[in-house]
Image (cartoon, rainbow, N blue to C red; front, side, top):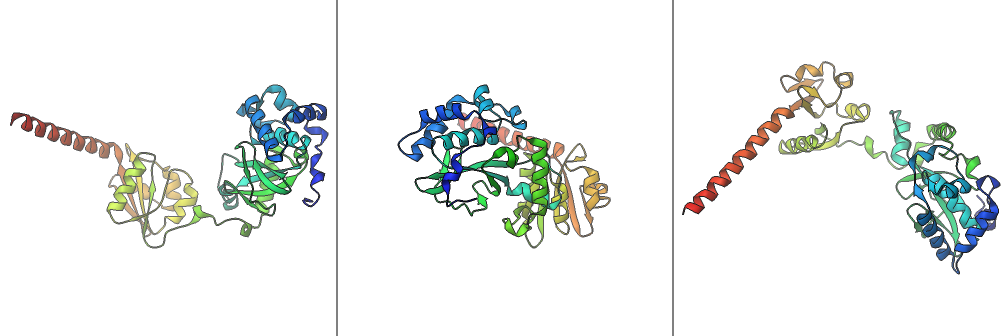
Length: 320
């Protein structure tokens, strides 16, 4: 990008909408200051548009967004906002990002069901380039276009003046192919540390269960003097290998563990043999199965006894 020549980014490609209509609306929103102009554009869009998620997977420009009175996601919202700003005299660049945790998921080779990214705008306000998140209506004033890690732990990977040729998530299948190809080859040293792949040294506890059971398991582990390394109910192929040599607490319900047995035994062969007994050690990894249908029943009995005790104490006080 030629940031020194900001006027290059005042013209929007014809593919983004009817320039005459865009200009007419932009002039209504233009103010004496750049920042007020941005505020006017964002306020007008917020008042004029409704969110409709199913529209996020087809190409939409200013004409379709404003004509339909709704947007599907950050991409078409940023397109409409960007062309209005350009026509109001504010140089604007579109910035594609992907969430860093998603990038690491891809680079680790883990399976994923969602694609997690965001579109920002770089806008030239009062003589300098700043970062704008249109959907959040927030501008970041202390910003350098050289920055790669943007708010929300997002990695900036593609900037341009023509969203359609850049390929946005609105062009769903093409965008997925482009994104996967780019990040598969990305030098990982450009990314922040992959915190999900961290592990506490020394013998620690990994907890597998759904809420509220994993909280109970965590408390139980802490009472045993163990440090919790991770609680999870997905991402087994990531976390189970890290649990080797440590302690694993697994919630079971009617004898069925939260983690699929086949997945568990991929890393800890014959681990299910310990379900009935409640524990088993596999290659130095201690695995405890906690049956919550029984545990919760005992917990309820304990609470009932406490209630009866309090009631008895109150009756004694009244009798005095």
